[in-house]
Length: 150
Image (cartoon, rainbow, N blue to C red; front, side):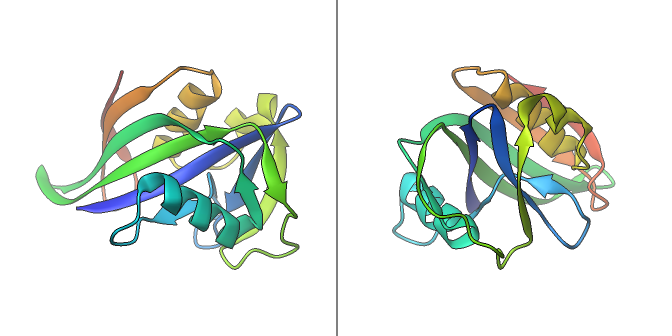
């Protein structure tokens, strides 16, 4: 099962998000956990590679089982570990290799173009919940079919 680690970095009432070029959707920067790497090591490495910033004291705020289904059959499944940080070191890259970086005011995040599943996760985690655990099921077209968040 693939493991993904990403981070929601909040600073001065804003959140840093990455706009992926394929669909133009905003996401929390992050990526795949490499073999022998902890999810904490992975989130710091991936975040720095994509943004130039190293999150300061990231804390785990979400663990999600992500499922892709086609005609009711499970096609793919992976785990996403989402961290939240409120400080950072480093300088923001002028150009990310993964897309466009932008700081967004927290009160405008809900209006940004994003996938249905990312909207559910971002909305919940920006509310400041301690730890969210959930399962999100979607189609190949990235339509959210059902979800359950604790």
